Length: 238
Ligand code: TMP
Ligand code: ASP
Image 1 (tube, rainbow, N blue to C red):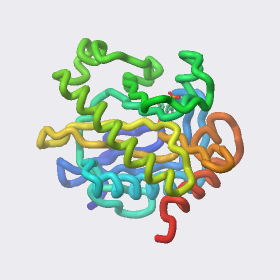
Image 2: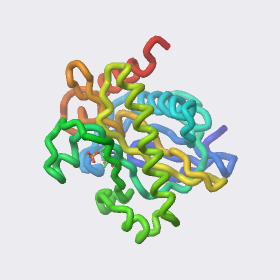
Image 3: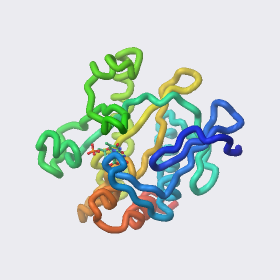
Image 4: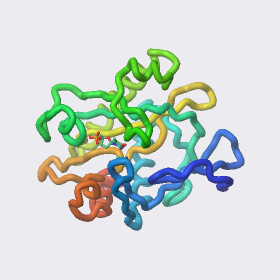
């Protein structure tokens, strides 16, 4: 499948039309952004690492009954995906408090939460992706009925259960993550976008070391080395 016109230039990836109206090519870039692109950078090879990690995690989720937009990974940085209408809600699931939860509500950084917390954020960079409640989702017509919000919540929790166990077996604590969903041509809600250390936080269970984009956000060192370590753990003996 070949790329045609550019549909959308994102912060970390571009989306291209193909000859098939129901399929797009997602091209991962080496660009890194944080805090709604106030901080920008680029590190060669991170696009390929994110593409590979996202491919592996989507395959894991698919084999456990979570439908995703991924059709096929074409090469190091390109994935063939189903064209979907993205639901403008970022679903964040947290197991341990850090990041904006700590800042917003004063919960102690590193506190293990008594249950996985599901939050909805409005996908709108101009507004800095504000946190929203279910009534806001209905008011803004982000979904057309309330059951879809329950579905997003349940899918977020299911993805959390699967990924948390998978990473625990590999010595990593899944702290939190963000996922996005879209509606495909058959009207089904499927997991879209990506899952990678760009959109998840992982802390090493033994050392507590952070192995995710906080390396870039907080100037902790080499983000590429952290992403390579995540990929190594995912692949295990493969
Ligand atoms: P937060 O603590 O900054 O709210 O982030 C929670 C998780 O969601 C963290 O793993 C990073 C991810 N995330 C994104 O991937 N994109 C975003 O725009 C935001 C706000 C969070
Ligand atoms: N994804 C957002 C950005 O790239 C926020 C973040 O990851 O810190 O700006």
